[in-house]
View (cartoon, rainbow, N blue to C red):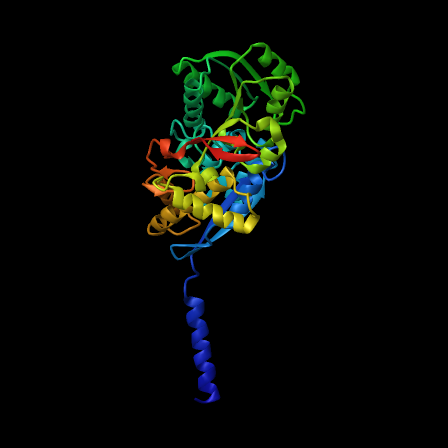
Amino acid sequence: MTPRSTLTAALAALLVAAAAPAPAQVKIGATLSTTGPQASLGIPERNTISLLPTEIGGAKVEYVVLDDASDTTRAVSNSHKLISENQADLIIGSSTTPNTMAMLDTVASGATPVITLASSARLIDPVDDKRRWVFKTPHSDSLMAEGIARHAAANGVKKLAFIGFNNALGETFWVEVEKAARQHGIEIVGKESFAPTDTSAVAQTLKLVGAAPDAVVVGASGTPAAMPARALRERGFKGKIYFNHGVANNDFLRVCGPACDGAWVPVGPVMVADLLPDTHPVKATAQAFAKKYEAANGPGSVSLFAAYTWDIGLLLQQAVPVALKKAKPGTAEFRAALRDALENVKNLPTATGVVNMSPTDHNGLDERALVMATVAGGKWKLQQ
């Protein structure tokens, strides 16, 4: 081949390459509470995003992660930025119920699907014009409250008191705990609240101890939930202490220390994956995730919040290929198709349960997603 023909062939190859369409790229935004009082939730969530797939259905997947500092205003501004500047096809987050509640108007007006890492059923129920864009991987508070009340009733609890955050998480969990307790014939004898940023809950716990409950439920998340538990034990409370699933990470155990020994927490199967019977439908999935996460972040580092984030990756692997058949990423049509595809995920084993979404259920978990764990010697133990 002559130099001239070689040059002609090279130019032709360049023209073909230039004319070829660029590979599709799906953009996933995330607003997580990686600093502030809820950082024990946001940090493992951020760590897990680095393990999520970077290619799905032949399309590259890019992740843009922002910190909302456990603040509702920052969560809203982050969601605005992810939609308008980053043109995200889907948003992960936020880490907490108040933050995600604050984002509802923004994501609805931007017609962008969200998979939140917060627990409240109010985020997805009822599936109205705003909530039709919102899905969640965490267990709903109603499921966990029922697990607590059922366990308490079976273990002789007649009187129950509650202390929780003075925000949407605490209030919604209180509503579910009160309902479940009454259904199981348990009397409510006290209710107190505290802020996630408070440095003491002594006054509230003194009132609870004075009400002489058999058990106290702490409706809070992250390391701040340890504060009332420590105060209860320091004031001589000998009854049972229950937490919601917002404490299911080892950083919480470190902060709570001996005060949490003997406490009960409804958790997802991943926290006790190796202790599950081989017949459990998500044992293999939960074990595989725990192994992968701890290989990257150290032994004993797995948390329920990391697992919730991992489950988003599993949902995306189901939904993105379906949406790609209908539209191109970066368009309103693709976002709508992705929303529709998420709503139709069926029989998906994840690290926390078996997911069956529907037009009226944007969580899709059932009783198989719940196990009751206790704390013994600073470790999670499966109820036998």
